Image 1 (spheres, rainbow, N blue to C red):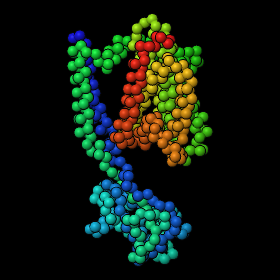
Image 2: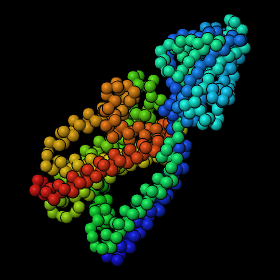
Image 3: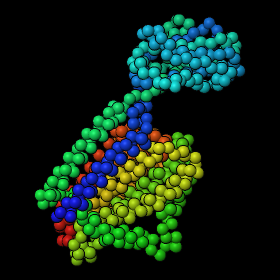
Image 4: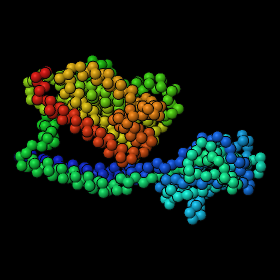
Length: 478
């Protein structure tokens, strides 16, 4: 008991140190995305329906508006050029109407403005004092008649706090303009408080586990860790067996784990690129992330499904914790996943994806996918023992799940009435955030990590509870 207690103490100490390291590492990797997000109060540009006036010298176009943007970064305006070469200088200015102060201003060469083109007035340091404040966007120029551009307008806007004036005269409609910026993320602003609070809860849980073990009381978590350590040789053998069996008598062998996602990507890219490529930047990497992730999920769950029945001979003759069998099936799939990540990295580099710090955070969402697959695998393996039709139902369900997940298509093509499919699809969240880390080089909002962690832990808890409750009756149905 003393030796075991020392091992437990060491394990809990290592876990505490690892938690502290991960907290600081995440803070560094997440960067600004931990504190700011794209503002939900951004003003989208309306579709152009007409021109306002030719912006010649002495003409002024003014648009009054307000935006619920905590950190205003830029304002853009869309222009018409009458399809002719123009000259002169166009000026954009933004004022705070409460005190008349100038917030930002910028000038543009009219000759460089194209038909339907945008001019964007931006600031290096976001403006933080204009949230829901009445603002005035003023446009003027020194162009001469016949060589001046015209700001475009729309008559479809219905915002009550918007008003457009042309040379001081009120006009119907709204200027074709947009305003964008960032909002603070509350959880990011209080990151260290959350980290300390969660760390305190983990420390309390560790102390309770250690205290219960010292008193000789059973702890499912500690028992599971000890069982994994005790049977680590068997686990290695089972993982090795599953991995070798998959490629038995195969000429290319393990190279298929490398080649398979590339071949699938090539076929699907050829079929779907003409349909979706315009909507998805770097479609090949977008597609490969989906293929690698779903292939792992499908393989891990499919192998876990028969893990108990496939090891009936061992289960009826030798005592081994039964969750070892689905666990080893998932672990062997993790080996394939690791190999499949190599072509993903290669294709990303070849297609010009620039890796930034947040790309490391994609491992978190892949880990969530692994644990989620383990939880579902435990559930499926237990169900398969009592209900053999589970394998056929799972075949149909997994195919439907594949099409319900945006693997080869963009989520934007789904009609509004089917958007709920993504909302209830756990794989969508794992894929979406993995792609953001790799393709966009950005960290998702903190709530995305919490969301994925909750989904993962709920699935693991449900699978583990069902498996634990049913495992004593497995031998009666094998």
